[in-house]
Image (tube, rainbow, N blue to C red; front, top):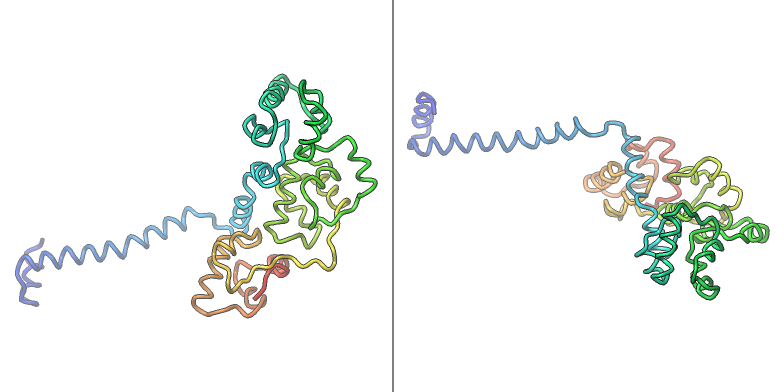
Length: 281
């Protein structure tokens, strides 16, 4: 340590040489403690995504990640074209039947309809009937079902109904239902466009076979009670927006309504319109 600085502190405070050294080290530690958070914050801001819309889109993709697993585990559907051997056995298939299905796939075989499964040796009619409703495939009789029930309430149907009426594969049909559930229910057919992985033609099929009841009230998120986790779980509330809401509540108390929320920089007119049906204050 510089002799002049040491003597200055000793003369000013009448402390020993060792105490001066201690103060000097403490001073350096304090400066370091103040500098580290600033450096970390600068680094994070530099490397983070700047565009709020991009960030919101990424948040939404995270919320709908791994749809296929959720379809199998949540709705107990099995796609014989893709489901693993272990999952088929867990879903009720006999081991020898599951093994033959895998062998058939590995040789290039494909199942287009549920009834195609009957071509597997050893799978009799009784076994097929027990497994039929678990198959994430349309039936050959789907056209007849469409004629009888071609227009259903999207907020009441199950995955199998989407498969039957639209012909969408099990994974895509599962996404339609899962997205409905994490939204809190569909309030507009235009929301079909938000389901990840659907083509325009598939969206049009959904719009032509499903309707939304005028009396339907979606599940709402209480903006003043919900935790950060509760808020960010909704597809229309990004992690950043959830964080901003929680901070605002801590400082200013409860939000009074959608107008107050609209003052947030992350809530533009389009976002406000989407959020409004799903919020309560």
